Amino acid sequence: MKYFNTIIIGAGASGLFCAAQIGKRGKTVAVLDNGKKIGRKILMSGGGFCNFTNLDVTPQHYLSHNPHFVKSALARFSQWDFIAMAAEAGIAYHEKEDGQLFCDNGAEDIVAMLVRQCEQSGVRIVLRQRIESVERAESESETGEYAGFMIRANGQLWRCDNLVIASGGLSMPGLGASPFGYRIAEQFGMKVLPPRAGLVPFTYREIDKFLTALSGISLPVTITAQNGKRFNNRLLFTHRGISGPAVLQISNYWQPHESLTIDLLPSANIGELLRQAKTDSPKIRLKTLLNRVLPKKLVDVWSAQGLIEDETVANLTKVRSEKLTDLVHHWNFQPNGTEGYRTAEVTLGGVDTREISSKTMESLKVKGLYFIGEVLDVAGWLGGYNFQWAWSSAYACAQGI
Ligand code: FDA
Image 1 (cartoon, rainbow, N blue to C red):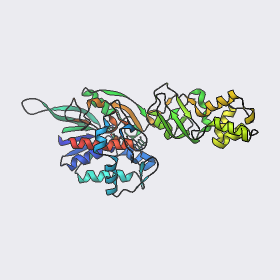
Image 2 (cartoon, helix red, strand yellow; image 1 turned 180 degrees about the vertical axis):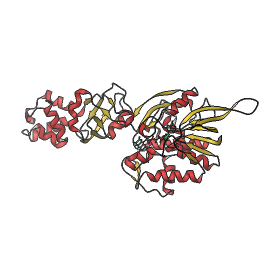
Image 3 (cartoon, rainbow, N blue to C red; image 1 turned 180 degrees about the horizontal axis):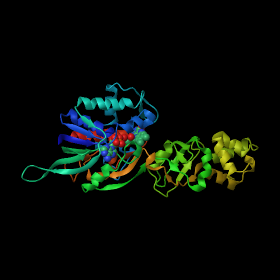
């Protein structure tokens, strides 16, 4: 049997960083992972350049049934701490937009930094591990109290005082995602809030399929969920539905069967444009006017659908003007569903944080059992917030062990 002070399940962002921090404090640590490779999501992230944090991180950038939960960890290891650490490691980075920080050279830089830190801290990383069971270990003392955990992996027994679950959420099963963390929480009598795909594209309903003609077109929009949450960013038409940053962001706030309101021209007021055109150039054709402010293909699709007439602006009745205003500024989009975990960047829901210490990430019910990263009911916005949660929760946990 192998003994370590702490065993971490999951060699992703949170697991690796936590391992290095615990090792740095002089404790023995092993990380077990089911994959062939460590940090697979880091390598895939940000188009291979890893959006590792954001200049503007606040608790408001996170969703959880327990909104105050993230505050302590984010304050104790902030974006500035990670940025300083990355800079010290010589990682070159740049701000892309909205405070999002990406590696200049590639996501491998982040993985290499974490590996170096783990090596320096004497962390043992063991890959291709199938975790068969996790049990509480009985103490050898006469009280018979539990002391730590026994883990069976690939037929071998491991024992530890502290067990950290860093196995992530369900997004991208192709990258090793599994419900392991939820099963462990349930096994130990803890609550798991129903998981669902977040930061995910929407798919069209059958009756919206004509929009596939717009596939590849991207435009700035304002998109609003039924709960009033709103994002200004780009929307991308795909051959299966809609995507792009605005859409991914709002997907975190969307519930099945709800609709979304999309303003396709947030920078102007179409009613105003029509009134102006009626005065200045009444003979201009409606399509010509719309082509000046919206993608031509979109105007063509509306025209083919009979949603707009081929007429001059002067000819446009009040009723048709109002309909056009609705179409442009209040497009009611009813998704068929989402693309699901196959393409989702994050999982909403997860281990209920009301049963976790916000200071140490330790279970309030099971001493020595910790949950960090995405396995928890914490999901961030698009823009580096999910990695920041991985770093912050991992750090808080390491200080608590
Ligand atoms: P993570 O998923 O990183 O690691 C979990 C580890 O546990 C994996 O190594 C997995 O193999 C292992 N594991 C799972 N089940 C196991 C089992 N049964 N036994 C053993 N091991 C098991 N965020 C962000 O802030 N900026 C970005 O640019 C991106 N980009 C991005 C792109 C893509 C394509 C995806 C899918 C996601 C992102 N994200 C992101 C989100 C970000 O990747 C994610 O939130 C963090 O990786 C979560 O870190 P964790 O350590 O919690 O899990």
